[in-house]
Length: 359
Image 1 (cartoon, helix red, strand yellow):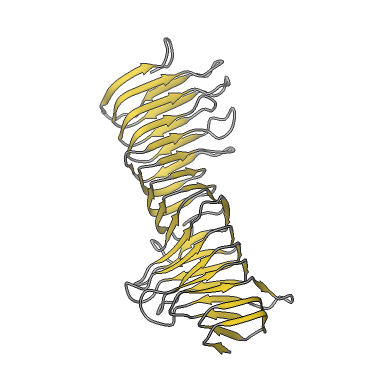
Image 2 (cartoon, one colour):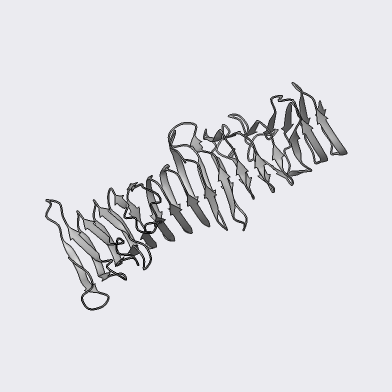
């Protein structure tokens, strides 16, 4: 059934194995057992919840622009649930904005067949996607945006359809990602303009951080950091950052747990304005396998005997000042110049107070 004009009703019930197509505004509570297709070529809204009917029928929501070129946006104002969400196809883009929680096991976002046909799904609140989000670039790009000034959880993996496809953008308040990002197929870009926490491993061609980003597992990406980038092992795990870090922002490497001394290894060159290892309450253990260029390198011991902080330098180190700041109790700080290469150490190395630190 196709509805070319606007639809207003108390309830819409869509039966199993049927497709209801809407090309204009919809105002109704929708109970879906089949497929809902929103194919407008102008910005429209869907006002009312979309829920699955009892009985276990296969359900899908599709947002696909009916015209070629840049897609119009369909805005969903209430909660949405389905088995599958499809935004765009390989021939026509789609753009969807979700203003309330989304619970959809499988989410597919696909760019179209011309440059202007970029497909986007924008989520303003929590997303639960147990089977994950797949981003499929074609000639047009595929992007998922986590927006709005609220702190929400994003549950599920996010992958490219093939290696080097798809973009994640994070804006405003804290978005916490529980699933792995790009581990099956690495993404093109993770663009962070707000605050984000990644609890599992992350892989992308590039990360561009102009906000505040915290990573609690391995990161594989060339990372441009002009904001605050924190690598924080939690539990009994070590972290490796594979790929150069550039930019003038702040870089932190600090243990999440009291008493623990898990390590953060940087596989290649690191550039930052300020690099903090450890804190006054936690340890930090860093291994630098490339050349490091930072204005200020600060090494802090924690507040417990076991919370010693160390930086092992296996390449050149170019700083204005390296400061060693022993912690409370017996927590100490140390910088180690190791490996068998001939390297250059530039900049002052100083104690925060007398008798702090070891070279």
